[in-house]
Image (tube, rainbow, N blue to C red; front, side, top):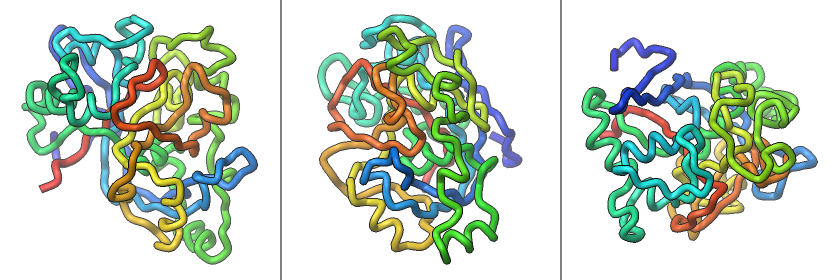
Length: 282
């Protein structure tokens, strides 16, 4: 990939498939929420500085993409090439070996067999901070230095003043499939409105795994740092973070600040994932 990074990237796959990605530029944002809908583990609001460029998928990983990488295997309940893959665990994606159906991790297969033309980059799951930054609009809604200073001195502006409740709108029906409009199933990706970065399905359709371990008190520690740079979550815990809401959940769980967790071996028909492409850490 050229040093002068393009704003979009289309990663080619065999059989005419591709995965579209958008560049997210560095910036500072307010992570978490303290509005009336927020759960305790979304609090307190705190500043996070994303210091590096990264690319994030325009859509969740589809069943067609998963099958191409995983030799035709498709675990999804709701079958459809353009629907998001679901019933995949964090372990299936990152580590593999959970059982005979997924002997090798999706990311291992993808990076080894389908990414030779970008040797200095690798695909991975987004960190929780990268996911929320992108969902809230990324660099297009990043704080100015004046806003950063104001937040650190008096706690304003609040997240509710800066970002829409859902990824791209305060009206969930415009941007997401949820329990009131999904008719009890996933939908083909990209059929609602995108957010400010051009990302689809960040609120609803399927939850999305993130890289981080989950700790309900983690944000309390983050707040103490002032401006936290590129957080990667707790060192260890029992469960992994998921984000974004799903076809089966109500609006409260589809908000951009909502965070939930499941054990890394969990496979459910309401969870999939989205990819990040970033420089290899050497």
